[in-house]
Amino acid sequence: MLASGLFKLMQLITDADHWRRRPLFNATTKGTTLKTALLDGKTPANFDQNIIGNLLLDVASSADVRQEKMLIGVRNERGDIYRLIGATKVNSFNNAVEELEDLGLVDELKDAEAPADGCDAIFRLP
Image 1 (tube, one colour):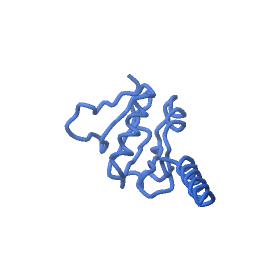
Image 2: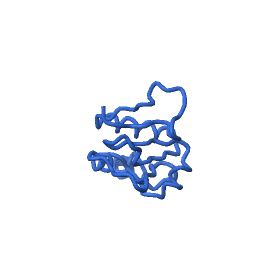
Image 3: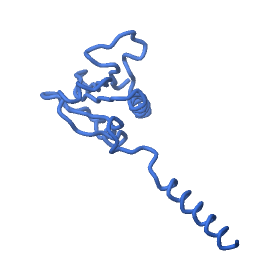
Image 4: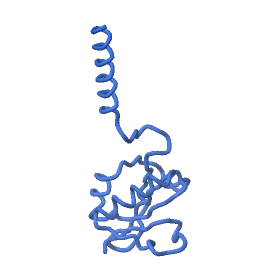
């Protein structure tokens, strides 16, 4: 009886340990990562490394990124959209928007009723 109880306890600990180590966000699952592309002929912003460091992004062609359901544009200091970020799921889009806001960028379409320049959100420096 004692051995049976110990076995069940060890199984519970092992199962709990398994779930603790399991990532909450599985980047390899289709549709959960964001795709991004730098646009040809546009100069990246000085803060671009912060975007790369804070968002989980898969590099793709601009044509592939434009196929995503929701698009985020990022403007450089000159006011040009130089980077596109595409999201398949609303949750991924909202997480990206939150991260960009945390970086101090503002969404110029936050109060807009419709997309602009093909984007659902466009971020820039304040």
